[in-house]
Length: 312
Length: 206
Image (cartoon, rainbow over all chains, first blue to last red; front, side, top):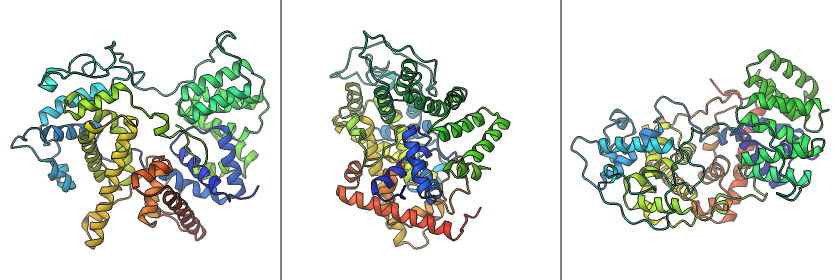
């Protein structure tokens, strides 16, 4: 295969490496594309860190001086309230710390309308902890009936185009995507039977659109309906990767092992690499090291081998 | 979660959610009208994406926090004009990107005028957690700083924030072809810099 020549291939490679750097799941096909490109031009693997780091620039930095979300929200809400009402004499105007980044850190907490911001901060925390399963779910105190007089101090205004109030559904904070036991495939009367290839395409499309749970259920349906197919074997690797990214290392290990025990194939490199990651996440250091040694013996020239050596 | 790749059919944020949900539209309007509860909801709803944007563009955490607040204020002040023509998230991201770009450009102009501006000393490279220090010969910010400003902006918008060429063209107010050209040139320049560094065996100092 020739090295990367086409702009589209180059840009696709950059986008995929960046997505991988953000910890996103990429499909086995995309992984194969990355491998092909990097094997054709080994220097690409050395560049990968650049794009992965650029992709991670938006991640929290974990620095001591970084404000938390609640503090930022309280300051903003205090400032916007201060635009409607004069700030109390003791309050620090927003513009002061905005233009003096060092000074404003010493006066943290003296933003305009502190008491108001604190009240709204508490409300905001409630909202932040309230997860609704879709955008159409009203939030108690916000959509269902008039807002609290304590928050508004004014009678509610008429609302247009709002759905009727529904019970608030407060669920637990977001969890990692969990891969559970395969769901039974739909009955023939429920949906027209799709081929293995169509199911694989559906799963990949869902994954590309960010619908991880739908992708998982479709991959699992593929496994259940066509367990011996090539597509189902590819699905094992995809499910392994999704499980890894969702924090379910044990499930991931199971999927990778199933793929490898069924004879391996074109995705053997991805499966073995994923198996190493799963073992490391599970804290099984000895097995992970053995898996790394096995990987390097089998695929010593691969891009993944380079990464594994760098981490040693 | 999706890998957004140029040259492949993929739904952008605008295509995926062209119309805002009725509840979002109503809440935004109420926030624009000054209803505190709706304002609080709007801030918390958009805060994660706004912070991600400002971290991408600002090197110091203090600046990133400041610009995040400026962007959220701009969002609240613009909420009354939100028409639901794009999803709330897309609309908020646009405002945040414009705010961040405006801040960065103004700051660069100031620094160009005032040699040795002490604020430059605040520009410590921002690290990503868990990043292997030996992965790149130099810090990623150093590579980006060597690019022309317009190319660096496009790289950050596309690679770090996953905006499409069309979205970038709108945000930066240039043509689609200009964005594509800047992206291509920026990628080429960055690849060349990294390869040169690796070739001479340059290693990042601790």
